[in-house]
Length: 408
Image 1 (cartoon, rainbow, N blue to C red):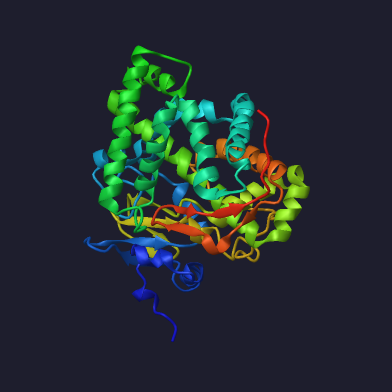
Image 2 (tube, helix red, strand yellow):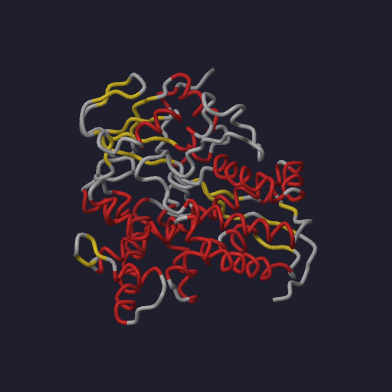
């Protein structure tokens, strides 16, 4: 008997453990592209949007679909929403003003100055495991690359980084029973905010050439950012900078292991395939599962009427498998082109500010990995995924390889 879509709760953590979740979203796209969903333990609910075109429309129209009241499954108090996501949960005119503070740092042109540092980080991280012959690819390798890059940019002391990574997973991985629930996530968000505030105060007194020093010197409409603003800004940059790219790398490695012919093709033609391969890793993994907006006036999406004040949630993981956009969307294809995925957002003013940085991190990482450990093998039977409501991550991914010493 076919499962009734009305009986499926997308906000229930158990759903994300299902092996057939992409099949379920296919049914939603085909049978009910805009569906009413409830959240366990809360009154009311939200409109679930599963198609690519509708996702694009929502993200490109911030005047109609606002981020000001939060970007989750519920309409939140704006102050709380700001604590959780800073400029992510703000609209114009404040959002573009806050975004401009660091936007110039993340452009492709200026990221060229970081190329050597990213290449060195990749070499150091691979070298740290290369003589072992085996390791956990997720925790020992994939997690460390984005952590090293963003923490170096922010000027985070080496001794604090492991705890920040733990807090980042706790903040974003809610829903997975091994990570925690919403209250644990809330605790982690506030801990990251507090750390950022303290680091910002330190940089006010001891400025350097890092990104945190830039934040302490920045102004919005002539006013300096408060300690609270800086803490929230830090939290947003650290969570976005670590977990999403780490998920793309680890999930991507599992896909390569499952498709060995494509893995070999990329190793043998690295530069040729890198541009399309990196996009396909993000599309197929879709590290950020969903985002939400608040409807600002009565409207209709996908033929469904929505009222002012309703919350709408769009599923990136579904949009990236939409048959109307992608040929054979469930196939992993490193040479896929075109690839209009929404892994970095669906366009509009809130598109991912760090997408160019993420691409270059992954480029340098996989280039170093393929050159140094060409016979690396992944144990897919030992893989443990993070089945969170917000991120699609990887807890463990055992691997083995021929030990090799890398000279510094």
